[in-house]
Amino acid sequence: MHSHETHIQNLSVIVQLIVVIPFFISLISYIVAVKLSNQHKKQWPYIRTLCGILGHVCAILTLMGPLAELAHVNFSAHMVGHLLLGMLAPLLIALSAPITLFLRTIPVKKARFISRILRNSYFKFVSNPIIATILNVGGLWLLYTTPLFSMMHESSILYILIHMHIFLAGYLFTSAFIYIDPTPHRLSYVFRSIVLLIALAAHSILSKHIYAYPPNHVATEQAEQGAMIMYYGGDLIEIALVYILFYQWFKKTRNPVFAKPIIS
Image (cartoon, rainbow, N blue to C red; front, side, top):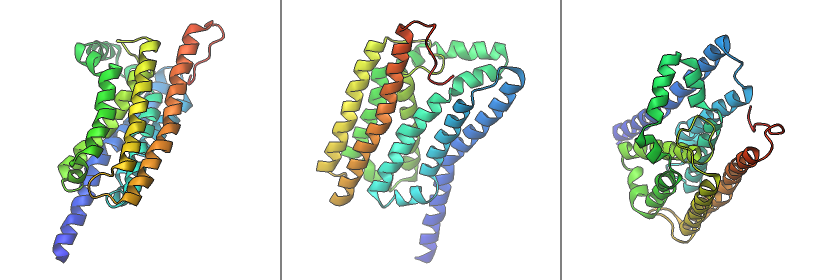
């Protein structure tokens, strides 16, 4: 019995390392890219660097350490992790403009090649706000209204895949509505605003559904607490997302002489 518990504990550490290592690599790469870029080009904005670091820290704290371990047995902690990994970290990392930094760091010829890749039909498809909403909010509905949530805590592979999906879908969702990095396939502000409002409504309805109908094997009290965290905590991050989108819209339509970037 002791040997089995030790094996499970070691497996948990291994799983945490597997999901967190990409974020460590990404964070180190970002900082190195900032240093290299500053040597040859205009100083990279400090606020973008700060957003990049904080975004990665949010993801790492969610996937490794006390919060990650508590999230296995406490639904409220799990929902805090959802907000950090699936909403706040993607928003902060998107604001850090990682693709712009990457393109200005690598040689011009390679940057043009990457730019051509970003223009292909696949990226046009997945960056559409409707598709991004289905992958992000639709994925959450699938997770919390089916046995998938219970299965995630019983399968290491599912745990890894679902958590990576939560972050990637959150990042794709954020990037589909606010254009910080180069975006070849741009859509109108009206279209993005309408889809965003629908997506936020679907997210809020899901939190109410969780409150009324807890996921499998989740106690009613924990489900209610987790649903409130999802509802009110999600609102704060969503307000920031709406503000940025509308600010960009306002900046686009006003006199450019008086326009100031939200993050320069």
